Amino acid sequence: MIQVRVLYFASLRDRAGVKEETLSIPAEATVADLKQALRERHERLGPALDSVLVSVNREYALPAERLADGDEVAIFPPVSGGSSLPPTVFMITEAPLDLNSLLESLLLPSTGAACVFTGMVRGRTERGEPHDTDHLEYEAYTPMAETKMKQVADEIRGRWPSVEGIAIVQRIGRLEPGTPTVLIACTAAHRDTGVFEAARYGIDRLKEIVPVWKKEVSPTGEVWVEGDYHPDEQDKQR
Image (cartoon, rainbow, N blue to C red; front, side, top):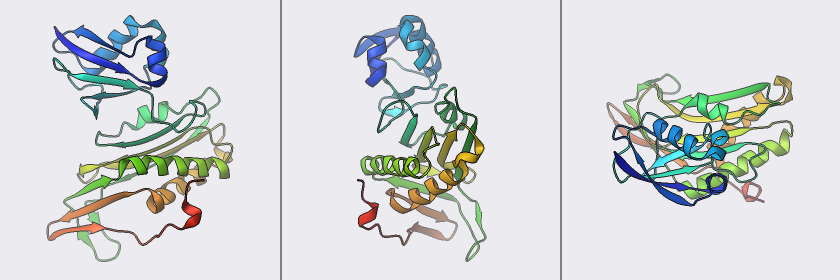
């Protein structure tokens, strides 16, 4: 057996009834195994565990990740600038994007439509001067990036009030060709209520005001890819 320190935040702390606790689990246990153990230990946690985020030693963790003795495991809801309804997810992460899990976290009983945009690393670029890409390296000013992601979500809801759930997620670190780098998802009751337009607006605004940068590494060298949009007074959070 191994011991892990489990920390609870926000609504998960209220459901568990404790701020933190130390648990003994089998030596080969994964994050998924720990979630099942928590489901059995804290009955009120059960309904929330399907959509919680988990970090191990302050890094986002996937369900199959194995735990080690002494690990610090944090359990928390998706980062949100408002209440849990409508569901909103903002995330800067080095972990692979689980598209199905992220979409599931946005669903409400009334949801009947979802539009998901995912950008990915190209191995070959034909636009402009054609060239190959070995990999991209992303970095972000994370605290400000999450604040501006909230602004983008607020703008979407201001323009398309029928949109229910919104997810804006950006990966950072080294990403190989074919790897999803960003996700914008919008859900609503019906497909004709703006979800397509809202998702398009979301990715366009992310490229304008969310401080994320990428370095393109090719067989012939490397270069930081920079935009040309300069935010003005109207781009400030109100």
